[in-house]
Image 1 (cartoon, rainbow, N blue to C red):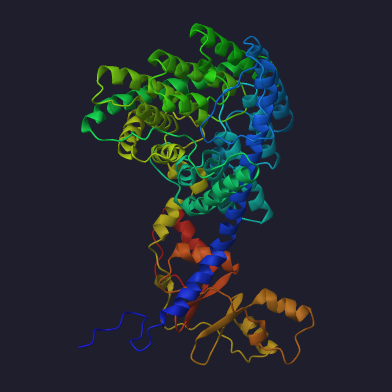
Image 2 (image 1 turned 45 degrees about the vertical axis):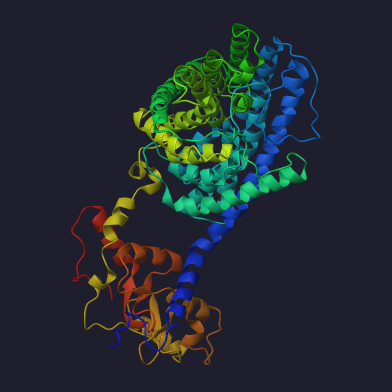
Length: 640
């Protein structure tokens, strides 16, 4: 016995689903195609912005830290180094580390406060605030100001990271592009988030992590922004490839697809006892993150109380950063690695990963606490730069110091101090930024080492759970329900189960038009009806299109209403009708997409048999009644 055919299918026509598939594809491309295409453009600009910022930062460091102060900071093994920016051989003159950052802070402070005050501090926080509170709007000048001021701040010795400027460059371009294309705030927010993720993907060569980062960074609870994941994924892949290709073509790197850091080959998780010191590490990273956040914002509030123009305050913070770097340098026996508390500081991480036995525990731990202080002084005073990069240095050095101690005390459970560097980076930022999953991935992609994925998951999860609710990014909100970007979502959740069929009264017939009706007959039908839209149907009541009253008026006014003009000439054929199974939230979306005051209601995807007309005002009335807590609408309301 033959089994019954599935609903909507015919046993003799195995391809009857194809028109539905095409209709679905057209509908998706109409609603999402422009946004996804714009995300590709955002990814390209983020990749180019990453190259520009890297080159500008290298130029500033070349002529200030290296050329004047004689400090030559090292970097990750696969860091981009442009050959047309030659290194200088000047020897270190420590006292100039007081002067160079101060000058950089003064120039940066003037630029920011003259052209875009919102570019001060760490740019990721400003982008998060724009997402939640400003409909994804960023002033066009902000990314450029952020790029220049951050290169000056960090390139002259201020402690900061690259991700803030690059994230704000990508986010800013996404916002500007969304405005140029006339996107709604919800779509502009997606482009802003895609720009943030694409910036992180390019600068850290971590496309998957950049994608998750943009979705996770918006909240300090374990919650994601699901609608930004796929668009950000496209933007992140494009930015990652753009950055790599341009860096290779300019001679900045021979192997652009290699991870940023290189790690020892023998880092593996092979003993369950290793989870014991990793558990202690997670606790320490949670505590360190709380110290970091409180120090950062405590110093920030102190600088806010200084009765000086904001133009000069970053210079004070930069001078204090230089002083702190000098004190740490001399206190640790003039060990050049201790100067990692200034500028980017990534080089110390690569040095420890190369030779984990070359650095004593006290040196690494001192650099970690020193980096907390210098970052707070630089960024907290209004200097421009990111806080993700310093977090990697703080967590990596603190974790490495603890790993060196554990290797001496319990070598069976801590065979390699280098693994504690990697897990320290992951655990610290997970706790500070409340982003355990994206941090887990970003550290793995930065090091190219997935062999520690299990202990990294353990450390990231524990450090996040142990940490308090004080986030590093103050613009984060607790959850989607607390975000201004999602006001009204809970109403849509309620009306998602209310179907349009509940508003249809049996026995009533909607006024219709025949394709061959003349203009005079169409006008007469509108005069007799109470609708601003009339459907055009076949003799079997199948929907062909609609005629809109405003468009009929334009035809009459334009003098084109000759005797040969009929309803078929006036009707729109690309209309998306409502179906009996559609819910109120779908109806509201379709009204916005079709931009009409009424829509035909049909039964079945194949036949499209007309069953009524639905007014936008009535759907909106039902929507508002539920917003105000009134009972759900029922069938006594006439919508057809």
